[in-house]
Image (tube, rainbow, N blue to C red):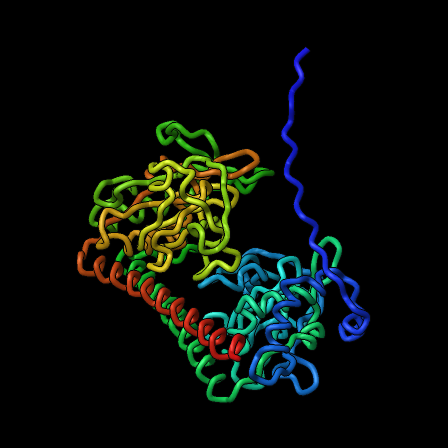
Length: 481
């Protein structure tokens, strides 16, 4: 008889603390353990007992802001219509796209769901405490009720910086409740202490945040400008027009269907590969471009790489390299960064994971097809084995390639490559086969490229300004003695 010995996992130490009765009374008799977590209590202690400035509360009577969220409602989803809706998980995306569309028949005040310039948005269910500042990009967009709208009375950027800081995040997360799905209510913000430094200092932090989000808006405007140049140069109609042009479905059949000639069949037998819109786009671009090639062309990319699977060995902040996953692709600064130890991995794997400025990343699994271009402050970070990186052949093609692949037309070409019965997947070989045009006018192609790269530079400038705001907040406000 062979006995298999199993190594028992090391037991995690129990986290505990003691709480006096008065502390419970001051917390409105809350008995949830997270209310008295060591991280949150330490943050409060640093604020209340050590900070040189007076302390006020975020909301409530004499607070710095008011807060509310919308009423719950039954959503009636439809195809693309007038009311695009965005989800809480999208608030940290640089340029979010609608997650769905709701019908005119939805029984709620849709305009009340729109967020307004100057508000701070705070996630209040599931993942607690993620926040953003509303400027031009998000203004008037419809967000679900699961986002708290905070309306500061003044110095909006200062309040945003506090909630974005580690101290603010820790304190917010001591106010949640819920056994399975955690929640926080607007009235819980009445118990969030916040330092109240002189107006000049609050204005300094506000201005840094305002400038950071102004640069994000400018970056998005430049990305839109590049898309318009691309669309004009290739004489591209709207993506909806392509759908209408490629409508080959048999209306008499009980299921959606289309016919494909045997001469068009390659080495793929999945029906989604042959969706009619792809053929319509490819035929149009072939007529209006100077030349059509593929991502794998050496003039377009040096390499297309999906890192091999590896066991992730995480370390504390400052002890390893930031690891980026698929959910981070739309953000300027991932809110839940993890740090990977680099020493256990061989050099090839580390090179496959390594990011450099203007590399293009495509999500490969789960929700494949999301795409971003790497800003310079991500330089040196790692990607997970769920992401494909396209290393452009040169900076002179990187911005143009991203502009085409991130367009609605490029998105259709990427998504036709997806396969998988349970988990959707896309492989490097599929990315390499995606069509890419060269424009007839080289100057326009260069202009598109330079516009995208300038937009990408502004994203790093925006990140640096926000980091400066957080530094000033820490050094001159939270830890000022």
